[in-house]
Amino acid sequence: MKWIDSITGAAKSLLDVICPDVCTVCGERLVNGEEVLCINCLLHMPVTGIHSGGNTELHQRLASTHYYTDRAAAMMWYYRDSDYARLIHDAKYNHRPRVARTLAAMYARQLTGCGFFDGIDVIIPVPLHFSRLISRGYNQAEVIARAISSVTGIKVKDNIVCRRAHSTQTRKGVAARDANAREAYSIIRPGELDGLHVLLIDDVITTGATLRACLDLIAANCTASRTSVLTLAAARMQ
Image (cartoon, rainbow, N blue to C red; front, side):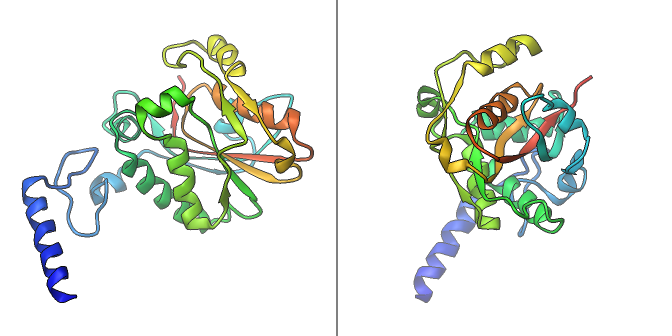
């Protein structure tokens, strides 16, 4: 009804004045058609350009003798002191799943055009332990996975790879991260992944320990499965 649309529009206009939607990176007010990022920050995003198979930097970080990563993609490089780090920080810690959802859908539309998702059967988000899920309110990897699913139509399965209670990976060295990650995950109903091409999703890849642990788990328990990886960000290793 027209009067409802008028009231809704007026309420939105008032909300925009009281609490304007601003760019997560630069803080400038967003204009019509912009979401999460202004066009200037979007154009200057430190994109990785990595979204393929082969021996890329991401493949090297995920390397293992137990499995082969078919494809690997990351939307942008992550620098801790960069303004763009706010995107990942807000999505993960500041109760802004919309940031992850918007970036993931944007990236999925981009990758659809280059065939990245061709042949992928199922999407699996890296899980959070229940206690952390309760305190945070959502799993940012699942938010990303479902946004990608909404663009590609590929089914999400969030109940196969599970997470045990463990200490955080933050500020651990490479060896400590690997040891911690190996103890953190388990798999149930692995037969559901037999023969499938699995796309594993996380928000950011640093040393790769978390993703390697999940990939190892799938390789060890699922028959003839293929695996690929997608993250919103990849830490630039020095």
